[in-house]
Length: 192
Image (cartoon, rainbow, N blue to C red):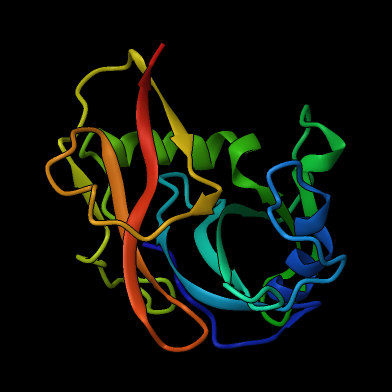
């Protein structure tokens, strides 16, 4: 199980995402520097105990109707080789673990591997900020057996209860900047 350290990160994850997010083709805002707030998320454990895996939901409050984004992240103690330059969100000095290279999880094999394991019912979502604490609010509807599938991450999130009963969907909640709690589909299985 991953240990959550009560320490500082410089720059913070939100500061790194503020510069990185507007450069992504799926960014729906028009601000060069969005006003991001942490809105939700969860973690997965790396079976090798090497990579920190977090699925963070951030909300951009610079627009009249806030937009929520899902950013899966892999935290590593060394650079990840063989990925495009844009996969690196940035580096941060962790108060306990030292320099962390933070990658967009869709390019990190540890992150995508554990997401696939979650969709098969072989991994358990963990609370975003508590060590060794499962998060039962993160649900997979209709775990998918076998290997013949891909997982599509919903980068721009929509609140909807449509996940109920839909097979191959990963659902979780987040909170809008005004305090309203909602749920939606974070990821879905697609056939290869």
